[in-house]
Length: 305
Image (cartoon, rainbow, N blue to C red):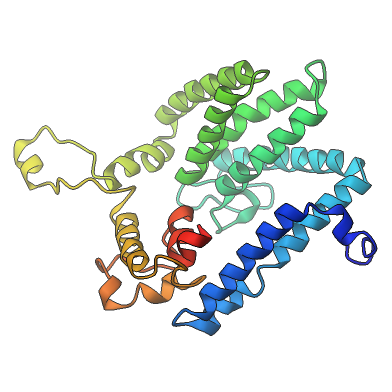
């Protein structure tokens, strides 16, 4: 990219966004330098500029080759179709095309023991949808294929048992219904169809329902018992997603109060959570606080956020 674009590098890019990005990188490095664990944090912040070059390179090649957008769309289309077929087979038969078995009744397809199928689909889905809007018209055969993929993607994520991914894909559906003038009816219809099929599947595959809905209600401590004695003994606290998540958030808040401006440094939550003054419970510590906004706030401070 740098070789091909060496003469026009600064002429072509949007200097305003380039300046914002460079300022953000500077803040990340500064946050690492003033933190208590400099070298550990700098390993991430010093390498962060690669994302700047990555995004500029993508922009450059998209401008140079109009076919690249179409190639990306068909690549994602093929990927989604293969994953849907493979994971459906895995869920129904117990093994996928290459013999990978279900893990804890959760479909993982070619990802094997990495249970990231739902995460992969939910995060690539908005990009796939955006390319669909650009390239496909209502009279195309692919339009109807895409409608089927709409529905099957949501069902597949439900069967994968990935609760975060299930939340994300439904959140993206709500955004489309609220903000798209041309496609809100299509997305509303496909969402209703997905919900009805998921309700039916819940009776045949209760394991998926138990993980996505029942376990979430249990972890948030929202369940209710008609037995008065059990209800009296029950911990009445309501948790943010789970006890562990709540502990992460409270520890993060304590760190933030001591490091409001530039945070504790990139990747340093995992180190600071071990300190006694930031410990909320034995569940406080992890590699990250399991919330993107909280992590940015606690590790880069108000300015970075």
